[in-house]
Image (tube, rainbow, N blue to C red; front, side):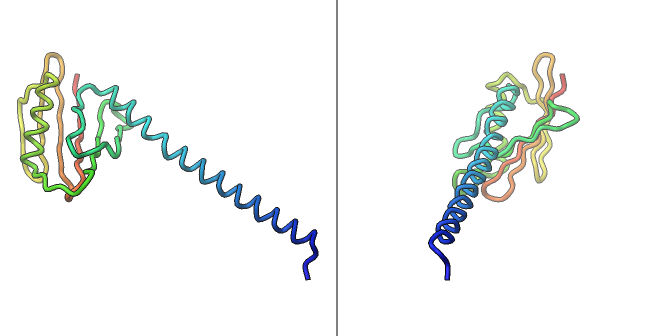
Amino acid sequence: MLTRDTMYQLGLFVLLLVVAGCAQKKKNVTSEAKPSVDIQEVLALHSEIPDVLLGFYVDNVIVDKVNPFAVEVVYKAKKKTNMTQETLKKSYLSDMELLGWQLVGEFAADDTQLLFQRPGNRLFCMVLIEGCSLIRVTLLPKQ
């Protein structure tokens, strides 16, 4: 049979485990929230990236380790969409024109590959729809 002191010590031990577990969970949430700040910083550094498409949000940004100007932006749909590659291409072209880029070449297959130019700069862009809710845009600038 457990004494009153033993029950008290056991209760205190369980309470400490719960508090430690909550503290660890809080650390994980903080470390997961940090990349969103990095995403915003990367997007701010790349003026060649158009604004987010209506109905989508930026899920991830991947910066190439060898060429920090090469970037892949992953957009996720807020809800299931039936966007076609052609619709996405037209939307992306109009956004790029608003940013001062002129289309000088394109190739379409499973993905759409676009080559843009503006004075002193060129930009290779690959746009790909994956499923009903994911868009990958890879940008390779050349200055």
